[in-house]
Structures are given as C-alpha cells and as structure tokens.
Length: 208
Ligand SMILES: C[S@@+](CC[C@H](N)C(=O)[O-])C[C@H]1O[C@@H](n2cnc3c(N)ncnc32)[C@H](O)[C@@H]1O
Image 1 (cartoon, helix red, strand yellow):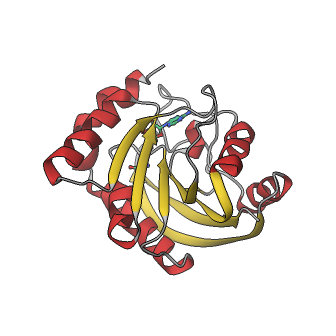
Image 2: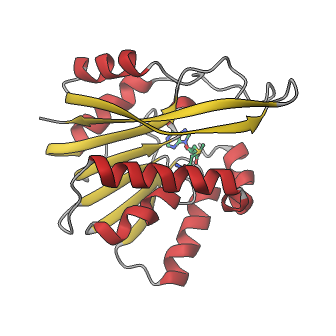
C-alpha cells in the first residue's frame, strides 16, 4: 500500500532546505565512514525522492532507490529520466509487508525512514538477507526525542532511537562492528511554539 501522506508530500519534498542540508550531511558522513567504490551496488531504502542515493551515485556503481510511496518514486523516476541516469533505478518496496526481493547489495542506506517503520526487526532481518557478505548497513535517524519532531496529527511509531539500543539490536540480528557518529544537529519549529534542537546519528554495521 502506498502512503498517502508521503504521496502528497513528494512534489514539494526537495523544496525544504533543512531536509536537503540533512541529506548532504548524511551523505558526507557516509563518505567519511564507509570506503565506497565504483564496484558497489547500493540500495537507498526509504529513499523518498532519492536525495541520498543521488548524493552517493557518483561514488558507486549503481543505486536502487526503494520506497513504499508511489508518489515519491514518481518524483525519483522523473529525475532518473531527465538526468539520463542509467545507473539509478526506482523500485517500490515495503520490507514490512513484501517478500524479501532477490536483489543483493554491497551497501544499504536508510535515511530518516526507520522511525516511520513500526517493525524495525523485520526490516533488519530483510536487510541482512539483502546485503552481500561484508556488506554495510548505514542508518541515519533521529536521536531519541520527546515526540515533538512530527506534528501530533502525524504520529510515527518511533520518537527517534537510542543509538546503543539500536546497535545492540543490530548485533542481535547478526550484524557486527556497529559504530555511531553524529551527523548534525539542527533547530526545527515545533507545534508547542518556538524551536527545538534535534540531532541525527549515523550507525554503520557490517553483515559478516
Ligand atoms: C522522512 S522520509 C525520508 C526520505 C529520504 N530518505 C530523505 O531523507 O529525503 C521517509 C520515507 O520513508 C518511506 N517509508 C516509510 N515507511 C516505509 C516502508 N515500510 N518501506 C519503505 N519505505 C517507507 C516514506 O514513504 C518516505 O519516503
């Protein structure tokens, strides 16, 4: 099922400078933390309009952007067509509900999507299967926040994550060498009024 909120948000998604800045900071942190190469096939899971995958594309062989929202994928497909990007493709995928695809990857990145996914354990298992041995998982997401990042009308299953708890969970699913760094901190207006600081981490984990 496509997500109607993200379907509607897709057309203007890239117009929010804070969002684009966050993706750039996440991409830079991935370049710093992971040795990328032109032999690597990458999956950008929860890709939205593909901002993170497109950032990484010049450094790798190919990128598949996967998302459950058809609206987001339409925007990404337009970028692929207009840019003549033969090394990027968009696929509809919801690892909470769909069977694990046959495709295998050297790197899977998940940028600000994990807090929208109720059953993160199911998705970690699927990602473990989809990574080639030695492949790397990168998760960028919010540090634990008091539930004010999203408006009350748009509840999400996770108010960010505790980094250590998430790393333990990944190790429980067979990942190793989990590390975390801070990608950035930024201020965002909140419903109660004024602005609040949020921080975003990057966890890297290896599928042995
Ligand atoms: C906050 S957006 C982040 C998009 C993009 N990674 C970025 O940083 O611009 C979260 C994305 O996760 C997608 N998403 C949410 N649940 C998902 C699921 N179960 N499977 C795949 N994608 C999902 C949404 O459709 C949305 O595009």
